[in-house]
Image (cartoon, rainbow, N blue to C red; front, side, top):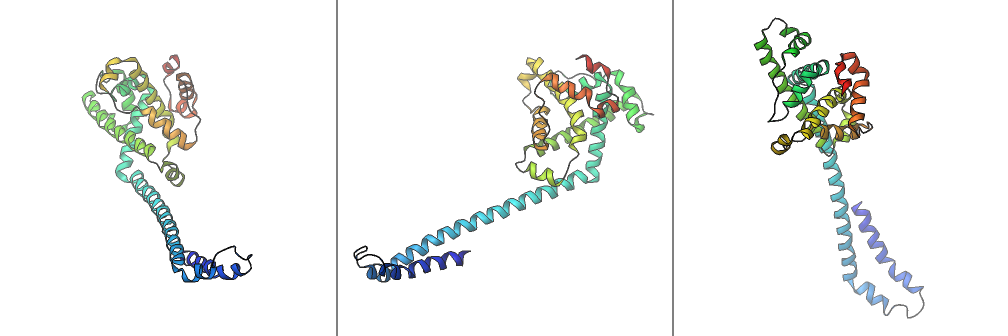
Length: 260
């Protein structure tokens, strides 16, 4: 490309005199001296060509760097999402979210724990649900289940941070096209948690004063856009989506959510 541009400039310069011979007399004053003795014209043209070539090279290098960044993001995120350690994060997180689907009290508790103030205590009514969802909890005491649930909720925080990170990346759309992170599975249960968190935030001046962390629904709205899901514009649309989703019904959605 660079050689072609320079060659074109030289050819234009070389054809100046033959062209000038066919122009009417007096079109240029002393064309021979202007073109062939004024080497500065050629040097100026070559310098301009060098600038053009430099800009082209910079644009090409920027495109290569961009592609390498996207490929690196895909590789890093795929490694994270498929690692054995992160599988534990996903399993623990999904147990929490399934418990929220099956128990409205636990869902309200889980949403409250996303804030630093006005946190609810783990409801005793949710303990049977936690035992049901995790075989390892079935033989444990209530106190042991409380500690195990705390560990699961810490993993849920990691999962929420993962999706928030994915949503905030400029390359998210390209990354997702090359590596699906099972968002369609997570979407209905995350919207349940996110909507409860948002309603709790809007209803509490204390939470609005002391809690400035990004709401889960902000992450979900960004991911919905990337994945091509229709936006959920109102509270009614959110709850209609949650209550009618086939997976939520199959998971055993607590019927009391329909009363909202």
